[in-house]
Structure formats: C-alpha cells, structure tokens
Length: 351
Image (cartoon, rainbow, N blue to C red; front, side, top):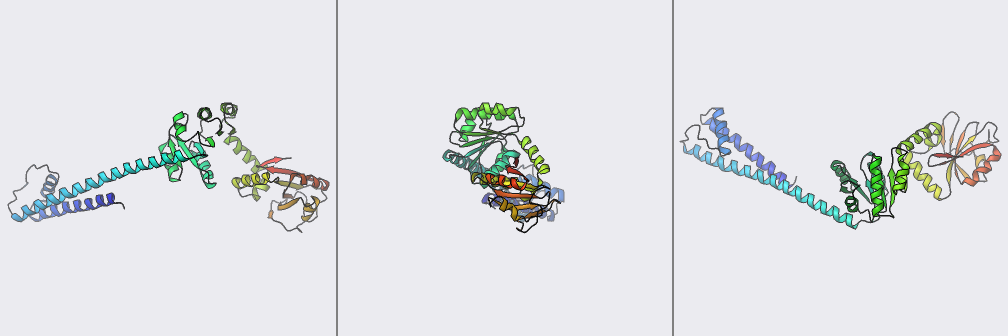
C-alpha cells in the first residue's frame, strides 16, 4: 500500500472513530441520540447553528474543543491523502507517456499493428513470442491499456492520419499490418503508410475478396482474407484428417512446414492402394522403395488409428496412409510401387 492510500485509510479511521466517540460522550451527558448526532454534525462541519443544549460543564467544553481539533485535523489529513493520490497518478501518467515517447523514438525495424481487436491481439502475442518489437495503434483506450499491460508500446489515434503513423515510427518500421475489420479503413491506412515509407512491407487484412486488388493497388505487399483461410482450414479437417492428427495445431504445422521448405523438405501423404506392391509388406519397404529418400513419420490405418513413429516391421494394408518426411524428388520413386501420393505444404495438398 503506497503512502497516499495509507494516509486516506488512517485519516478515515481516526475521523470515524472521533465521530463515534463524540456521539457517545454527548449521549452519556444526558442528551438524546438524535441531539448527540446533530451536535456532532454541525460541529465537525463548522456550520455552527448553535449548541443544542447549553454546555456549562468544563469537562464537556474541553471535550468539545478536542473533538473539533481532532475531527477537523483528520478530515484535512484525508483530503491531503486524496490530493496526493491524484497528483501521483497524474505524474506517473506523464512519466509513463514520456518513457513511451522516448522508447518509440529509439525504435527501428519494428512491426506496427493497426488495430488491437481479436486478430490484432493474436498477432501481437505471436510476434512477442518470436521476440519482434511491436507498436500497437488503436483509437480504443481500453484496448491500448490491455496492450500496455502485455508490454507493448502503444499509440492512440486514427492510423489513417499521417501524424499518428509517424508517431508509431512508420518511417523506421520494417512491417506494417492493417488488421482492422473495416476494409475501407485498411485501404486508407495502406495508402497513408505507403506514401510516408515506400519501402515498408505492408500486410493487410480483407474481409471481402473484392477488396484484395484494391489493397494491392494501394501499396499492400500481401493481403490475408481470414474468412477464406478459415473456410480452407475447415475443408482440410474434413478432407485430410491424417496430418491434422499428426501435427499439434495450426501454428506448429505452419512453422514446421516453413522451416522444412527452406531445407528443401516437405511432409507428404502416401496412400497405399489396393493394387500396390506394398500391401502386406512391412512399412520399412516404403523407405526402401524411395531409395532411403524419405523417413516414415506416422501411419494412419484404414480404421482411423494413428501410429506415431511406427516400427519398421509394421505391416501395410490397403487404404493405409503413410506420412513421410523427405524431398519431393524422392516421392516419384514410389510410383513403381503403385501408391498414390500427395505433398502437404502450408496445409495445402499439392499433387
């Protein structure tokens, strides 16, 4: 608990205690309860309408003077604590804004995310995990507060305005993403950013497929259609469940395939047809048929059972699906064994 809060709590405790003691003192002196409360209220708040009853006893007069001193002092103490809380909050806010501004000025090669909605939040979290510096731009203060709590630099304002993008360091950034759900706004942001920095890479979101060519003409390098991606993924789950069972989720699958592609490798599905020479043969025969150019990663049996890293002696049957890791040029060698094969890259089947 900081000092200002302690002041408020302590002052309030003393103040309330003083009021209760004063009411009890007047009551014990023979006053009624309502008279005691009324006397305490007009005294502590300095209204001074006059005493309810004449105070002639010296002890009661001394008590009344002490009550006024302690009550007013505790009230002033509470006010001081409240003022300190407000001042500290404003100072901390100003210092935080200054530190944010200084951090933005020193930042280069960062990623700007325009829009911290559902898509923006997921994107920012992914970039944070990969260690990329991120600046979030949005008009919603509550969302920006969430972004600050996650450790991101933020800029409040309309990303279609030059000044806002310049504040986010668009002239020094490497990538700008427009992930707002409004296609028109994404087009305007793309135009503005491209005018300021003609070398920055711009990745834009589009809800309507017809917006994609407009974004590209406006200066976007790439356009992503979340609805189309989602529909495609659902189709994959229906048409190609084997690889989905093998790979632990979208992020893992995409990252793995990207890394393998850079090495000239890929994941492939090989379906054992009924007339294949590999039927009733051990799964090790697949590697032999490809001249050891592939490695068996998993096997999906015809009944839907998935075997990860199956033993080389596992017998293949018709309609089994073998998931292989290898180079594309090694797969045609399996054609002599009369199997149907498909390449998987970024979740897309490539015959």
